[in-house]
Image (tube, rainbow, N blue to C red; front, top):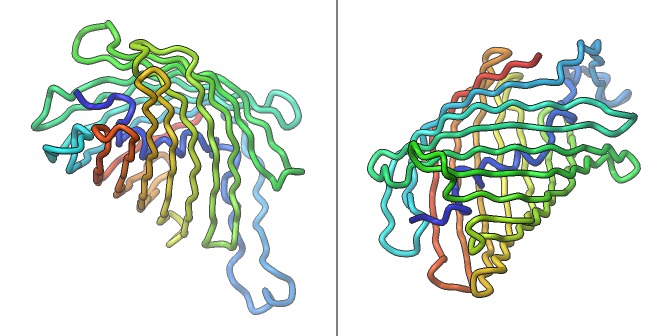
Length: 288
């Protein structure tokens, strides 16, 4: 059985969910002109659209990995399919406070190793706080529930309740380049089985380049420290290096391709492993 809490496909894509990106849409810059050196770069102001607090995502991805079970020895490469539906809500409550909630259900199906198939359901509710006096950072705090099942059984093989908090900072360099930084602490309140209970502390840094108006290239690094306080003092240090190319040919459609390389270093040698993950994805996004 693979380590359920170290699902590469979930960890590699978790950063955007933590980032509360809905509050930091990139502004469009005016085209380059000879006068830029005198008057500086000019932002294009847009008329504020009608508020649409709900967003529905439908995602389908196909990934290849060289270590499907996340193990130290005897790695097996495999292809797997991921299908998911995600509903989010985000709306201003008062001044700089925003309410933020989400529901998601994802299905993972493996080609060569169907014993690894599972389903992951997540629910979260919390708030976002804009802090312009602290370098225009966004702070967030959420309660999160995760439930993992296998097959047709409704009984979860793993479930956990967490309190998660952190901050995000986006640095807009110019019309093409931007950086983002983030820090998150996720404290486990309860888990079943409790041997898998852990606290998580992560740092993330990313770079984004706008190749064209609807084409984006990104590089990301994610560091995690995982404290399994019910498992013989297990401590893991997790590194994920990723790159992706995202194309948005239509308002509601996004196509992407990504590659991630991960290293997990544990004080219990059995849990050390390395893994690669690569594949294309298609997403449909609707706001209402």
